[in-house]
Image (cartoon, rainbow, N blue to C red; front, top):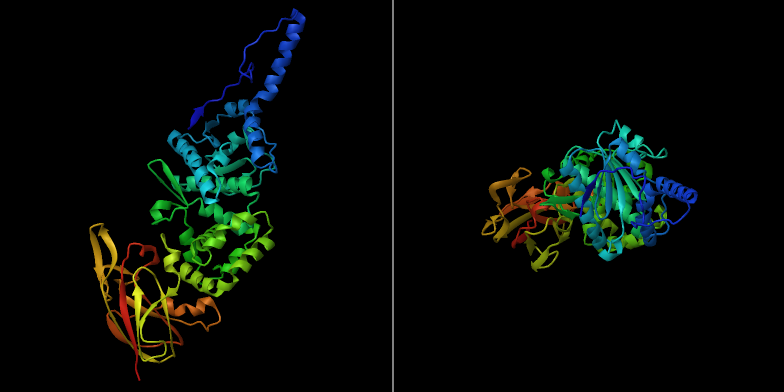
Length: 483
């Protein structure tokens, strides 16, 4: 529920909403009335705030806030207040639809934060934040005049959260302003209910992860898998990572865990922290482990990271390779669970024999055969079978064979075309190990290849990991070693 109100000074407010009379001699009556007026004038502007903040202290008594708001100053400065169940939004933005949508979105986010962190929705019933949305970053004069910009508030580029409060500047595009509101709201929620944010990469990465959303028909979906750039106008995290690949700015998984707090003065680190959390949240080897990290957000960075690394150390080599595949093929809608390396299904023959047969799924990206080859070794590859690479509508599947279909292309090659790559596990770095998968050989129905390097044969159909969800079926691949 949203209530939009203009605030008026009330010199005679009665906080208890009761009517009473005083049977006193006139001089005493005057003194009593004077006393009531004094209490009302100096206490009433924050009485309502203190009421809900006292309820907040029951949720987390470790968080305190001495920042009080004088509603008379707010009104005099021309700041509007829009209240929902879980947020009071103070703003000088004069777009009622926009501000009402922000409050509605925030209210809807609370139950989804609860669900994500495994909390009962009832536990956040009395939880509330105050947000200060500033229309002009270069001119926050109205907020200063209203006493809504504390002197110790640090300089910030877009948003900043502290205790019950967060400040944000109006962003270009409706999506990005809403994203920023949800980002800062995630910080507040984690502080209150998790008793901490964790290290910088986790804190900011989670705020980005749970800030990514869909807003459709006045309904919010958090932690949404964006399908294209148009769904997240001005967000730009995917573009940022693409631009920093193969430069000194590219980050490994270890680099992400060690982003310092001060690093987030640069917007580029928000992109990498989001990518790290997106990867860990969805990778089959880390999904369950990552979901338990909210339990240790009270630890400092070193202890938090060490616990996390200890729990994933047996999978680290695989994760490093899959991370490289993810960031090198990153796109809106990228499915990490489908894009990571998986095992091909052996149909007949045995490893090391001259002729071996595998099933290659159309529903996953690179599949590892465990068939080792030496550089220069010649192999004949033949394939058969029909599979589905998508649907123009629910009744019309796009049927495909391993030559692919020319109705659509991916990376300049027909969609669905069979490809072979070589995974070199002996290379020193993960980037070098997957190099042969980023530069695959085209096979189609059949062909003869000469192994460009030592390694293990891998197969996939040509399609972005962002669009594997609607694929169905598999093809059969026969590999024959030639003399």
